[in-house]
Length: 376
Ligand code: SAM
Ligand code: SF4
Ligand code: SF4
Image (cartoon, rainbow, N blue to C red):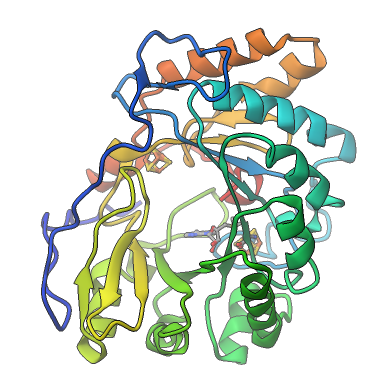
């Protein structure tokens, strides 16, 4: 894999004032270095070997998807014969709730439901209802095609916010990006329904890929300016082993900010909390906020507070992990809540992952888990 050139520490101005992104105090003021999770909910966050607190849990509820985005689930790999997980292999809602509850006792304050496409999971609002009882912020990431018909039920069940992925406004380019004949209007209807249901501010994720949808960066920015929705651009990442990633296809966060800032001057704003993946910018004319997630060119591993639960119940401490902890085996083997908490606490306290930093320094990597399975 080609090495990347580490960028300078500071960013240039984008058509306007430059400011360094400042970081607010940690969301979890208490930290727990004992390696043992509390029994109360919530408890102080457990920390890993690099002193990073556990704060987020991403839960993949299905490894299936109705899209075949070539950067995530290319048809050549995820075709008709692909061995998706069998129903019995999936964690049940009750099992997911037990893991989430144990994670909250180890410090988790934010849950994100993801996949695959999470809205393909049957009766998802029933899971949301269970998780909404926990003292956490509850969010979901979706490709948006099934959102219009589900937004109100999700909100009623207790979901706080949604992130909708949308890579283009032009239908032909969008179809090339989703490879499933999905139309832009369906996703825009989902975004409108989410906002109307109170799942706001709606965040919109766009993966920018050079030569494919980089011409859509400015149209997307102009479309969502002034709507109250927050558009975020993600650098195309080398997740999994299927997408044939190449560094020269990455549109860097800096490039994206330059393109938008040249037309609509931008200024940096504070991160909401340490570990927030998006670098936040606002239009100087007050017409809203955008974000860039520079996962390739500016690794943010030192602030990474995320744990991931795969569809079949394996816990991973990094998006690029090659192996994880089998929690489903514990759950189905009769483990107590105490044992679940201990397993999560032990795994997080032993954590030393910093894949993106190593990639940036040009170190070789081993096979990685697909994003659709581990949860994006
Ligand atoms: N299917 C849902 C969706 O697309 O929003 C949720 C799962 S998807 C894996 C979560 C996020 O990961 C999406 O915003 C998607 O664009 C992003 N993603 C997938 N593959 C990526 C890659 N190779 N590089 C950067 N982001 C990627
Ligand atoms: Fe499906 Fe989301 Fe992956 Fe696209 S990015 S293939 S919508 S899981
Ligand atoms: Fe976190 Fe791993 Fe991504 Fe680094 S590479 S930010 S440790 S998920």
